[in-house]
Length: 260
Image 1 (cartoon, rainbow, N blue to C red):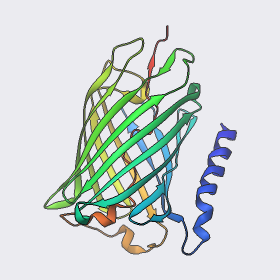
Image 2 (image 1 turned 180 degrees about the vertical axis):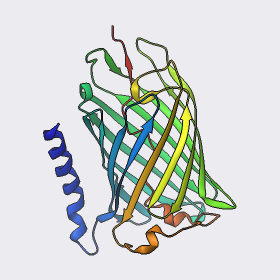
Image 3 (image 1 turned 135 degrees about the vertical axis):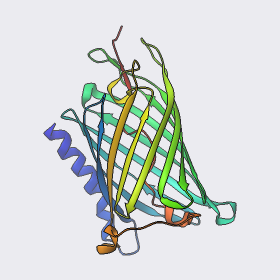
Image 4 (image 1 turned 90 degrees about the vertical axis):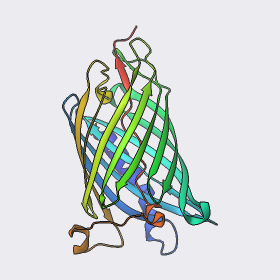
């Protein structure tokens, strides 16, 4: 695990080095989080959003994420692009991720499409593992779709309905609905709580899961006390403020227990 930690730190440093260039690529924000669930082990995340530059209206970025769960480390390396559409009233984007975890050496390729509107956002992700079965665990392919819907009179509250499907290899498919509520009382902190039909992170499809998560996001150029003062937000949302939005996806590789 120490080697994985050093490797992750090296990757993050690689992404962050360009931040020293005044007009070039740089780190927009850095953060992390803690996720707790009744059917899964506690998980810790550290991530950053790195601007890689802009080509005409195309905004290119990287969103690396480092994970720890059950003393096992993981790394999600992703790049993507976003651009204004509908006359600047919305943003469209896509991303590609390479996910790896030391937990039985699971590996996965992810591809996502996203759409940010003034009144909602939509996020579609496809997950394609390419690792072999290890110790009775098999990474399985899947797809998910989620929507972020701000509450008009309280836009610091966002409702996230979603659906997912993971194709089982040796066991039944994991499929169902999810519902999550995000509360962002200050700019730097978001609190999530919700549930879904399956405990995806622990490889179980025989019972539902209730979870909670806290995320911290610290912008590199707007440090100050205002980050922790109450911020109601705005509605409709200014989509230009979402160019640096954290990629919405399942960071943990989904697997099933019980090999052939």
